[in-house]
Amino acid sequence: MNTAPMPTVSPVPAALARRRSVTTVTAWLAGLAVIWVGPALLLRPMLDPESLALPAGFAVALGFIGMRGISTARGRDRYRQDNLLTVRTMSGPRTIDLRSLRRIRARRFPGNQAFYDYIIVTDTAGVTVMFSRDDDMKVINKALDKQFGRPELVGQPGGPVYISRLAKGVLGIERLPFGVSTLWNMAMLLLFLAPMGACAGTVMALAGG
Image 1 (cartoon, rainbow, N blue to C red):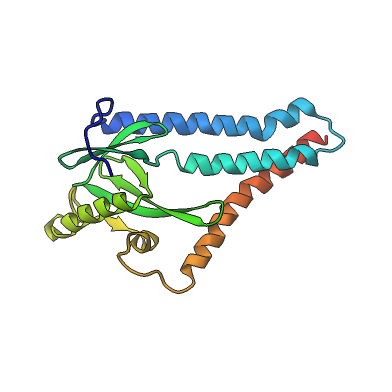
Image 2 (cartoon, rainbow, N blue to C red):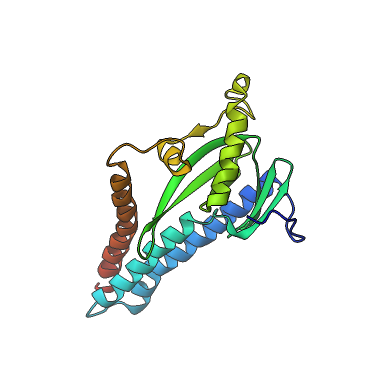
């Protein structure tokens, strides 16, 4: 991980990071809505709505996966100032306070040949960043070691953070119970297929009418 200062990136106020995230998600949802129903309404009636339903459903499913990755730290550069870690994301740079982590969850995405695990880190200011690189995992683990070493701050800013069981597995804190990883894979595939099927059904109903 390159932690050298990046001239164009400096610590970002939490309110600004949250506002950028909401704006990006809103725009993304609007785009998905257009893909979901726009072509079907423009091209109706169609003799073969299936020819439109499947590509639209696939595009929407990919769009939902992309939207869930808006907070992902992009590139290799990281800007570190004391306990503040600034990264680039799809919605712009955002900064999390490694001294005041609140919650860590995990997310898994299907890839070309495998599934890829991410951790979703949220600090007490409500700023969220998603990480997947091994060196980022090490940085988060070190931050957790410092927070759990201060039991008097449980439930307070700077106190121990909530870590989901899946996140503990990704971070190497504890092994996942037998079968959990397989169930997790199946759930992630379902999250891909569900919007795809819903969109395809909607397109067929609209375009065929």
